[in-house]
Length: 361
Image (cartoon, rainbow, N blue to C red):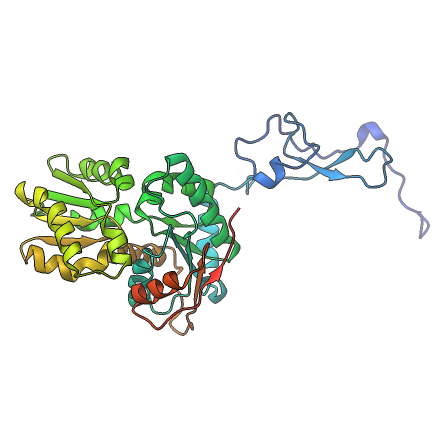
């Protein structure tokens, strides 16, 4: 008979049942989170189950490592698909749905997208970044454009946005795929929505494109259209003078009309039936274009089509703001001037706005 307070005799060591060891990870996963990858003291050959911990008690201040267990049901690190599924799971929370949308452009032209989004999604809060200190993007190299766009996205993420719109045709053409690969929140551009809208009419046979030189040179619209409709005749025309004329508010000025006639005549001579406005400045020219082209030429502007695509994308992820949400609008520019604030008010058809200057790095 055992006495109370005395444990049972322990079996010999060789007869004890030992839990099987956790399988060691022989190689680090192909995708490691940047913060972990960049920590000091980690050797490339070390498995991901060992995280570096700085030992402050050691005289040599050498790194030690603590072993963590990785749940097999949730691989480390999570994939982009798993993160999007998790965001969709969280989207039922009003806190997530009420987060702002992030929109950026090289200047203030992207505010036409902001206006279209506000008209279509009045309950959404918006954070807008105009990189006015480094405009225009169209004259920069693709590598520089990708660098600038990455810095723009990082700033918007720091403001807690739930999705990002690249409201710049040049940045959409050169940087969108890299941005989507580098970040795990929804990021959309303006090219695919414009292409979808242009091809929505089955009667469309000859599409004209006017844009900045950088967008035309990227062949992004031409490639997207040709993939969807190989039989389509695609006519392209760089129009570098239009954006400066729009920013001067010369929307129906004789100089603007003369420039439009010069740019559009070669497209009309080749039988254009649809005109794709592949610059976010150009929606402000729609009234003038309708007078010049008449009712037979269909106009497709990137601002309206992008807002419609954004609405569908947010709805598919259950990320639309609730109906009772009180929207806000924050305007950030990398270079402040009275001219840009007046332009912003004109593009949004609103009273004068107060912008905040930010520095990107």
